[in-house]
Image (tube, rainbow, N blue to C red; front, side, top):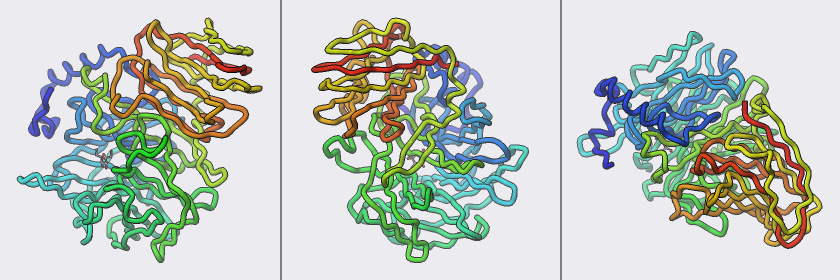
Length: 491
Ligand code: FRU
């Protein structure tokens, strides 16, 4: 279906209850609704927004177009949780409503101040000629949960030297001062990030562009920047658009990743850092955002999806979900990402096995399922390759394996089910040199998240298999492996 501009920018006031009910019905008939991931009731979800711990609860919003699986008028939808696992759908968080966000309440972040939770976000507007003008806006949530937008934006102009691709403020506090990074595009159409400073979150001073070691040739736009310090190091995380695929890297339409080094030099606005690392080596991951909680943990959530790609759920009137929350730590100059410990709360019925697998594929009969957590550890490996086939059906399987010869972890969704995004390839790989390999895997109705060797690498992908494709197989070729596997049903 072709969506006209009018249809994409209708406000919810223009929509009848009947239309929403009709859409909800279509969504409910979808065979690929998730069971333990945050997903939209109807329409399209994209970036996580305003992620924060406030007043004893985690608040997590997402970009939302309620009326269909399309990027239209964006709202912030509000969810909250006490444990990062069980999420409550609260309802509308921020609704585009005035001349400063008429074409979308775009992405932004949350920060506590004076006993309230503040949100700074980009108000997207378009004029009659469809020229874009972004405003940076503020909204405030009080302890009773009510959210009020401020009447006027706090940053009204794009600084000179940059185009109207200027958005996604991420705010943090350093001593008495607030800082915000904003994703920007230079007039020469290269991606960059700029820095602002404020005492009160209302009055912002433009400091300048942040100097990085990435130069002026690292994509054409940097979306969703995030900056934080962890274990004494500075991490700058962002989603660059326009990187060309190179070897196993940058295979998706857009990337997201980070550089890590010394803490940002706020006076000189400079980041000294090492190489850019992709956060996720799978297929469907973009625009992640982090927060720090009351226990001091740095937690990341990403959008399990990508722009400009059709997904098989589109025909059922919805698209995308968020990833599971990951706790970040640092090891050897790289981020380690592990599913937050609370996810163990989901563990239900448990089955275990220990097998020697030698040039064979063994179907683990009592392991079947379409929604589960699986931990598989492979040792004494002499095989050229070994791994798992998940969601196995007559003509379907999703393969997670280790190629010992090439020293690569591989996620192959060539035969996962209903095909999509095939123009970007159906196999993802990354180099990992290790004797022992462990895969901690979360399988939901239409997704797989694989944490490799304690979070050294992560692969995330949507898959759209048939309902009865529930088998689990372990295999090895060209030698043997010993596998120890534990599977938990998800409660
Ligand atoms: C990233 C992004 C952001 C923008 C939002 C709009 O996916 O394009 O840059 O704020 O989505 O929904």
